[in-house]
Image (cartoon, rainbow, N blue to C red; front, side, top):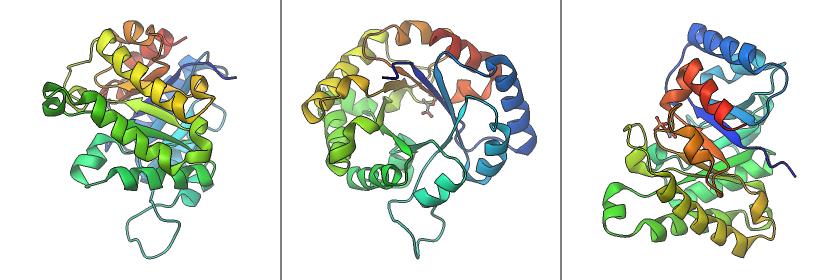
Length: 249
Ligand code: PEP
């Protein structure tokens, strides 16, 4: 059983050939040949090939930020799971709140994406999380459970092969982090839901995301049901990302 924590960086729509090389060279040099936690970087699609090469001898895994819910065909602008796999993609984010919010992705679409990823041998990182209004209305648990239920339904026989990221929408890119207690409370709810669907729920990695940084990572990662982090802004700064990685070891 791999019980290492997983730290995944989400570069979002940032980067460039030179910046990617500088960032990954710095990470590779500091991490070395073996890392004590699992590490991944989710890069913009045009850079998959470049980053695949930069990570050729690295323990850092390649991740994509999105995948099509369809297998192939007339879906202009989309990338299939099989295409991502050809570039050595190990993980893919599905249902990031920015996809749900700006691209109208429904729970059912997110579930279909997770299923396509698994079928191609890629681990989906299924993102769930409530908005500020939903939290203030006392709906946090209901929202994340509904989102996770759709993903579980779509991947019924392989639930233990997904990664789940709890990312409260109000904490993403805002500098407002959930307290370790708030995050743990939701993670425990998600773990219980996974346990009802899979006998291997204890091996499923539950990541926290939302303004995780070098200063708050250790406390968040010390919570019993937080198995890693999905890191946006801080993953673009090598020193900060490396401190988060150290906190996970
Ligand atoms: C994210 O993009 O998933 C994220 C958590 O971003 P940030 O760390 O910048 O809040």
